[in-house]
Length: 497
Ligand code: FE2
Image (cartoon, rainbow, N blue to C red):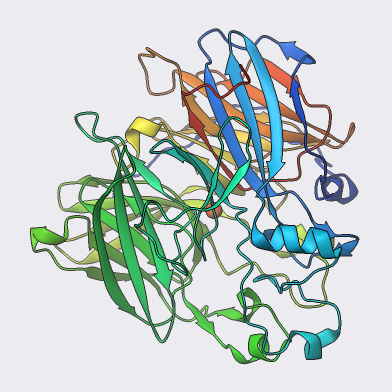
């Protein structure tokens, strides 16, 4: 595999880039729903930035004061920032899932969370209650004329993109049936001739696991669906695509259902990382009629939540992924807000090279700085690409909260970093191409940044070609948005009319 160089050019880290108490405040619930034009702006919203950024994440970290055990159990709240004519409008609303409505009416937790949130009353009150609450909190995407809030273990929820009103569970015009899952990491293949495809999957875990792949055209119609069985339990959050393949990393984990069934742990907490087992890379042809079979490879043990991108070169498939040495977990009885960042290993960016001919896998560390939430130019998903944007730690080494946005040039090794330390905490940057732009990084990296000094969030817009000059605009919201998960951009404008 050809080595990727490294060249950094940004200020040296301060001794104390953050304080834990500042970071913790970003995990306060935001129960309010807002709707306003943003008027507190530093800099200028770029001319040409027109469209809508949708973001999803847990809006509530408690139910009527009863704290959740893990943020991933929090009810999905959509935040929408619509850009039009140099202005920006903010709106947020909770997804009115069945569980959200019931719990808000009851004023208490009624459902066990996958990541360990329990009903009051100890194990006795939780044992044998295996029903899931579809919390719709992971991703939101506008596709086929629908705005869909996604959570990987259940069906999407449909929303009105202008009002964010919840329509209810959306079966994608019959593609899904009740109880089907639809993962929270769809990939959009820009296609060669404008024929965009949404490619997504679902996992049915078990002693052997079933991976089902869905491809939808731009109108939301099903183009293909095919299922494949892989040996062993599969805990797979994300995948990567190329024009010809879907690539899954089957993390080395085992699942012991007993603590979950008997009310002692959440289902997610019953997954145990197996450091002596290899990670399995599963390569599934996208066209089931092409007659190619599923191929499996092994590489060093590690845990991957997110892939940045993948592409083909001859017989080789390259996959760039954020990889952890082990699965970060919140133990029962512990408090996620008291996490000892130093005691955990950071997520780092690796490139995996899978050779389909020689059946070998090579890997290379690309970025050792703690990083997460990668984003690339939407037209280059699944294709050779040069620039990558990620949330990153302020300091170059060790594990720490995300406080910065990092741009990596995979061709020259050049890095650019914009940091919000010591009081700011970053989230996933979404790359938005400039209309008519003529280079891969001609556009903006947009991220929500929590400003703990004012307990509010900012929409930070960076010129993706040049982070050194700082944000071209920093839009101060009137309130905070709890740390979110994922978001997407659409050139469609959903500002109020
Ligand atoms: Fe994710």
